[in-house]
Amino acid sequence: MLPILESGEETTLIGGQAVMEGVMMRAPHSYCVAVRKTDGTLVTEEQPIHKMSEKYPWLRFPVLRGLGTLGQAMTLGVKALKFSANAALDEGEPDKKPVEITPWMMTLNLVFSLGVFLFLYKFVPLFLATRLGKVVPSLSGRTATNFVDGGIRIVIFLTFLFLLSRMKDIRRVFEYHGAEHKVVFNYESGQPLNVENAQRFVTFHPRCGTNFLFVVMGMSFLVYPLLPVDGFLPKLLLRIALLPLIAGVSYELIRFAAKRQGTLMGLLSTPGLWLQRITTQPPDDSQAAVAIHALNGAMALEEKQGGELVIA
Image (cartoon, rainbow, N blue to C red):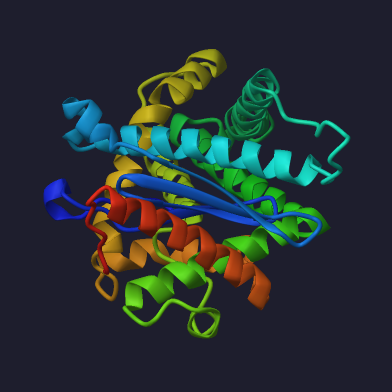
């Protein structure tokens, strides 16, 4: 879930992310990830963090602040995933050294994931749209090719998510994703934070990263036909180069719409909320308890630092 900044940039809403058998929660200046190990025990990792705009003042400007926030969210997300993976590999045997995911293994995985992303969502759609344009002359124009490219990208994205949701381990992650959303809703409502209250809320949240991905694809769908370039390679390179800008603008749109639910701008979140029927699943009480544990840890550390938490 994106930690969208409020007006004035003084505070931020709670954000979070599902990990393997756990949840990461973050507040403006604190971070906590809670994971349930195979033996049923809960392990946590927490640390203070700084807003990117505090460390780098130039990241307070529109679009740039989105890149800073997203960059930090990805960094914390990778760290949380590493912690959860190590917890899953720890068999709890005192005489046996636990297997750990090393930093270079995580770096290699990130590089591979980035390569797969660029191949699936940049190269493949453009390649297929270009080939289709050669077969069907009416689809060979710049605008037609770009719209076909966008349509193929969305189909690949939806198919990929659906196939992921059929995997047992990923479904567990989606359940923790649902737990994260329910607990954030519980916190934002001002009601006492407990499993019973959290389970009353839905799993679809307007600030979810799923919404952000859908807005990025929508922005790409609108922007790419306007690019005055032809040829496969120039189009591909320009798409990759424009990705940070499109991500920054998409963040601003999500930020604007998240505070205007029930308005016309709030409708921007609707496709992403529909999509969360795939990326979130109803959690059981133990999963909700893990999410609450993570949020309590983040809030306790935030209060120690004199931070201010916001209820939307």
